[in-house]
Image 1 (cartoon, rainbow, N blue to C red):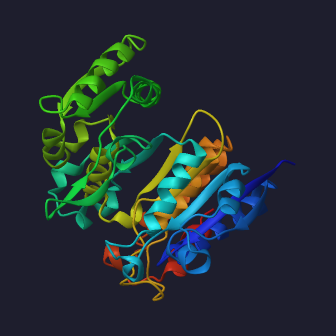
Image 2 (spheres, helix red, strand yellow):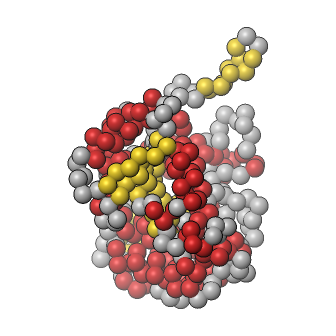
Image 3 (cartoon, rainbow, N blue to C red):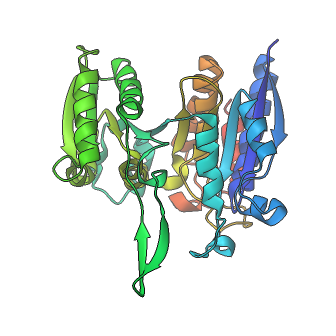
Amino acid sequence: MTAYNITLLPGDGIGPEVLQQAVRVLQKVSERTGVRFQTQEHLIGGCAIDAAGTALTEDTLKACQNSDAVLLGAVGGPKWDNPDAKVRPEQGLLALRKGLGVFANLRPVKVHPALIAASPLKPEKLNGVDMIVVRELTGGLYFGQPKGREVVDGHERAVDTLVYTDEEVRRVVRMAFRLAQKRKKKVTSVDKANVLESSRLWRKITIETAAEFPDVELEHTLVDTAAMRLITSPAAMDVMVTENMFGDILTDEASVLAGSMGMLPSASLGDTGAGLYEPIHGSAPDIAGKGIANPIGTILSTALMLRYSLNLESEAAVIENAVDQAITSGARTADLGGSLSTSQMAEEILSRM
C-alpha cells in the first residue's frame, strides 16, 4: 500500500488546535482504507520567528517541497504584529507559496441548508449557493517589486508594485476554466479594467484563453460589482477567477455566506509538486488555547488534499459526507451558535466516517 508523505505546519494561534483534528481524520481514513500517511511537523510563522529568527526556514521549505502535500494551520498574532518589524509571520506563508510554485488558490463556498440561519443574509439569497473562487496566488501587489518605505524630503513614502505577466494570468485562468467544465460551465472573471493596466492585460488574456474552452460561458465583472453580487445574488456564481489581492478580499467576504470563516477550506495548487491546504481563517488569537475553534475548515481542507494531491476521491467524499451529516444533526461550535469544543466537533465528524 502506498504511503503518502504529509508535512504538517501547525503555525500560530488556533492553528495547532485545528490541525490536530485534521490528523485525527487522517488516522481514521487510514484505519478504514489501509492508506498510510507519514507525517512530519515543522514550524512556520510567528513560532518560527521565535525559534529561528525567520518565518520559514530553508529546512522547512525543503521538507514541504519533498512532500506529497502540505497541511497548514494558521500564522500570525499580536505578538508579532509590529508594522515596523523586518520579519513578519505572513512572510513565511508568502515564501512557502512561492517556494512550492502554487499559483492558484481554490476556495469552495457552499452554504449548508442547516446553516442558512447562521448567515446575516436573507435565506432566499443563500439557496443554491455553491461556487469556487480561484485566486491567483504568487503575483500582483503582494509580490511585485519595488516594494518598501522611505523618507523623501522629510515625508514618509511607501511603494507597492502591481505586476502581472501574460503567462501568470493564463495559467490561473486556464485552471478556472477546467474547473468550470466539471461544474456549471460558467466563469466570472473579476478585474478593475476601467482603471488598472494590469487588469486590462488580465481581461485580454482571459478572453484569449476562453477560446480554448468553447463549452464554458465567460463573463467579466469589475471588482466593486463583484463585491456587491456576492451579497445580492451569490447563487448566480459558479467559478470566479481573479488576481491576488482582489481574491484575498472577496473570499473573506464570501465566507460570510457560509455562516463562519471557520467553515471554509482552501487548496493552493501549481502545475506540479506538493499542494498546500489550509482553512481560510486566521490564527484567531482571541480564542487560541480555549479549545473552542471550529475545525471544519481544516478538516475539509484535508478532504481537498486527498482529492487534488493524492487522487483519493472516495476518501475525500467520505470526509465531506461526514461533515455534512454532523452539521445536519445539529453539531455546532461557538462560532455557529453552539457549544461544542474543537475536539468534540471533530468527534462528531469522526463518528460518521
